[in-house]
Length: 473
Image (cartoon, rainbow, N blue to C red):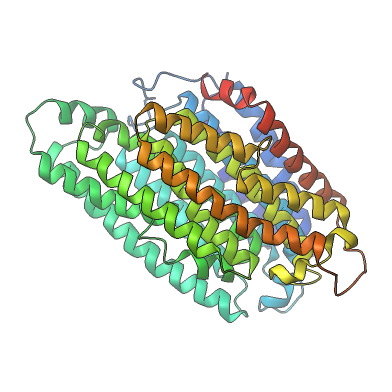
């Protein structure tokens, strides 16, 4: 068996090696960097199955910052799979990057565009194992700094520059809240390790009010990462302006990182009943805002941006209901259905555009892409026999078992809104006439990736046992 930190070290070394290769090999085709990154991540993903989980209360000797439990191993694989699919999308998006990046050659910037996601992936993997606020902060910053560059990468596009500036400023503000919250918690308890924090909070020898204030500050910072109301104001503009593969990475990777941290830190802090009440209010507001704001959208990226806020609400139901399994399964379902929708969006947008009307008649132009987007939309909406349906079923079931009936009721009602705005895309593909009847080309690698995501959406909707077994290692 191999040590879990080896996985992150391997990802970092892979990213650094590819950057050096790109810098000193002028004649190499930059897409080769992406193919090498994908191959390397697949090898590391296979190696993750040789990591033995350790009990949560026995962290490694790595300064007691790092744990290798089943949750950590599961989300390391989650980060690796996400990055692999994002890199495949980036290969399709390369022509757009070439046209929107300053440089003396058509290859300028592409190497860094393909290598940076590896460092983001390493940060996500470290977040999965972080059991100390110091490690959590350093890991989140590694992810954030990588996203600062990726969001504003196509810098000839004014919308991208605007997205980059907004993300940078608001993320820096969120970092300030996180550090200040950690400071308050450490000042009250004298601890940053989550296990020792739990013991300190139950000892009865500390003041509850300052600890609660520090926790609220931390929740504000994490609210930015997961796009929960009222900290979601950056989402629509950043999602629309960022390069589409980066938007997909933000939507899935950043959200997963925030929820993994929530699953970790709420274990000791749920001793304070006020924390649960705050999260219930935030979940209800997030469900309502995300789904209602998505209703009038005509740009598909903005629609997916607002809908991601709604999905944050469903994930918060699982958090409030103290169900790590329901929350984790929903994140997996969100991964396969969101990446599928963005993978199709990139291929279609290269030929037409990102508005819903640009998908008019896609069923006639490309039946394969139309069917893939159909599965993505009905899975996001929660139609039975899809991964999205089972994800919602698990979180609603967890809410009912914990007597969170208000959350379950609001969640069920807002699902109806989702059917309206997701099926607008289906109507455009199958009921509207296409402006152009030429077939949309798709590479063999992208077709394989879309096929895998399509199958995963359907299989996980009827047979979730592999994910549930992985979560209960």
